[in-house]
Image (cartoon, rainbow, N blue to C red; front, side):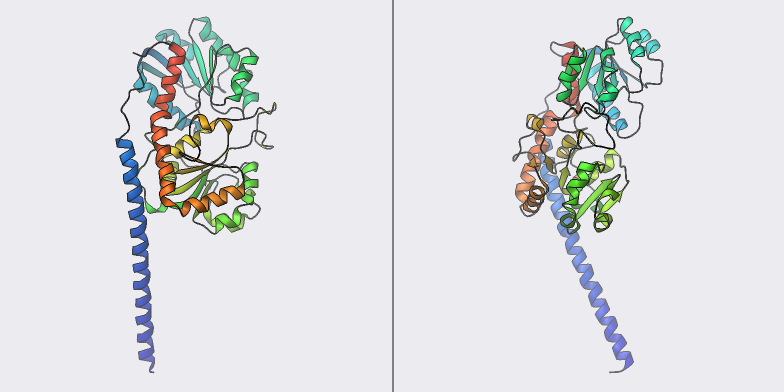
Length: 383
């Protein structure tokens, strides 16, 4: 065979391989698009069939004081402000660095609602109450920051906490009105949506690598490394076999709500693993108060119409039914077994995810939470 013929054969084989690769890529893209479109269509059908029941409206003036911080608090501020605008007669928004007393004296709000409140002294809240202005705080980090919130809560008329175990804790401190009010899903962001292919994964986890999560994922590293996995957050270099997973980890990436929702939408199974209440390196819970309530991520994942696999917190059954709307696990072995099961049982996976989507949009949006808050604060039937 001449050199010319050999070169021609090499080119012909190369072209054939490129055509085969192109065809394979096209077929894979088609399957992904078809699967994604089918799932989005079913999510859209669920959303369209939801009852349009109003959650209420209150003829009150609310002054909302933001956390004054960036992520992850600013998305909470935006979610609460958005819900309040729809549910009350007038909303006044202030930052904690502004003169709250002067603003409150001028506008005479029916309630001053503070989010988180760690940058506002108790004396500033006392000044408002001395003028006959009612105050409330919605705590964001219970029980992890209870050492910091302990000296603040008694200065407020009403305390809202996202952790059930903290209700009695604050009552024992002398707070007369303490109410359990978890966060929720911002339904304008954490909802089914079409997303680019780059967000598509089989498995994902988005969050910081607290030590209990590191210990858990250490036992799953080879399993996750062999699958289409995406992990994002700080401190994941703590993993014992970090190198095995590092191509699948967006290390030290802190993403906004929109991008987080895109990853949830594109993932078949999203893992939720609550942080420990006794983390040895980043914790302000010297009294070791336990936790039984689901974190905000629970509602956000469910709101995207993807399957939520979460560790067990006893109060989660108040919000979702395991096996019907979410799936729970108690160990790395059980989690791996259930991941493989639901990756190979697509219709069952989607059925559960769609049930969670329906429940979230009917009960667990910020409009629902703010409506609950207004009923607690002002009583009676809404306007």
